[in-house]
Image (tube, rainbow, N blue to C red; front, side, top):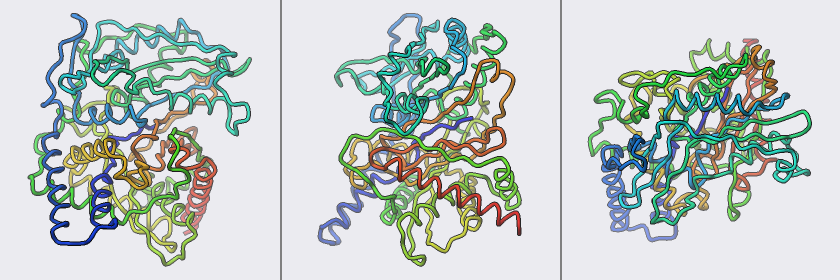
Amino acid sequence: MFTVLHCSFYYNHVPVTSELKRYALGGHIHTCSHTRWVFSRLLVFVSSSSSCHNMSDRNPIPAPTSPDSIARPVGGTEYSWCKAVPVGTGITVLALLLTKPPNIPLLQNALHNLQNSHPILRSNLHFDSATNSFSFLTPPSPHLQIQPFDLPSTASILRPSSAVSPFHQILEHELNLNTWRNPHPPSADADTDVFFASTYGLSESRWALVLRLHTSACDRAAAVALLKELLGSVGGGGGTEMEIKGKGEVLSALEDLIPNGKASKPFWARGVDMLGYSLNSLRLSNLEFKDVSLEKTTQMVKLRINPEHTDKLLAGCKSKGIKLCGVLAAAGLIAAHASKHLPDHQWEKYAVVTLLDCRPLLDPPLSANDLGFYHSAIVNSHDINGENTLWELAKRCYTAFADAKNSNKHFSDMSDLNFLMCKAIENPGLTPSSSMRTAFFSVFEDLVIDDSSEVYQELGLEDYEGCASVHGVGPSIAIFDSIRDGGLNCSCVYPSPLHSREQMQDLMDHMRSILVDGCNVESES
């Protein structure tokens, strides 16, 4: 099953670092006075970051637009998504390929039941121009309507000459369908649903059901739970009523559930960490940018490994006490270095973002069935040359992540990374070539495992994909991985034409070769 970005996108530390590069290294005289100016500007950023630590404390509770609606201000991480989605990062899409025509009334009822069970799915995002703040407004009853596209309507969307399948094209179409792209004048208040559903007729024998969500309302764990609940609801002619949780209110924001003391950081320590992100990233490398001038969209390529090699890969992880995320990151780093055809002895530094589900770590703990955005991120940079091996580098990648997690960096650095992400959105010129790339690679900490069931056959579910857009601020490539029917199945999204489909597919093919060769070597040792 799929994993979602986003990114608390989450991995953005380049804005300040690029500004340091621009002013300290980019054609300016290196004087002590100028250095002091750069660092004084950084301290202003740090001070602003501290003031933005908890957006839910700062945002006033809005007056509901309907007397029956319940309002809840967004938290700090949710606020970052409210800024990121309009520019193209954080459109979560779950697409199902069906061999049976979708039963619209049954699906409509099932989706309404999901909205009843999870109030955030029936919420609107409300922007208050007077206070420049966002909030969730939750009406008492569901209102989602499935939008159907018949064969001629779908044909007008598809590109006959495309190298990818119609289902793949519809997935990418939805990833770039941005309902939240500031359609109103900046001075106007706006309410927009967080959840949309559509069906597409792909051929006489294939259909697609697509769910599209604002990532502030649905992270990777929530998307997994959403798919399971939907399939369980419509399976066996389901659509049964679900219990409304609580009082119909959206759950508390992530920041409000962090255990006491876990996110605490003295002002001086925050400044040191911000400076560390900044200076470290001056040396970061990127994949080759193909076109930095054209407007970006999100595209997707695949990485698959058969069950036999997947078993060997997982056995290797277990024997070394690491998780698959470390191996995927290592393979990506090796493939990126190799793509530049550099001498083996030449070193490069890349940033890797690992996203983790905070639900079991909160106070009180939440379950995956508690929908919303409760992921955080840890950013690590790694030096690599052409002599690194898969398992040595995988151990290094995972250990760096685990050490940071044990030090509570996923909580203590949360507000810093959210703040820096927003700065990158406001000032794209401060990122390399105005690309808004803030890391090379993102991956999720934990495995998602899914096996086909009788429900899949009953519904005619042939395939599905889940991922989120990254063409706003984010990494060059984001990996949405799962183990499906025993085999590794990764949806890999990237911004186009900043990177080309051929470039990214070559990268994924090389990653696959590295992983297969690595698990064969491990099984022989």
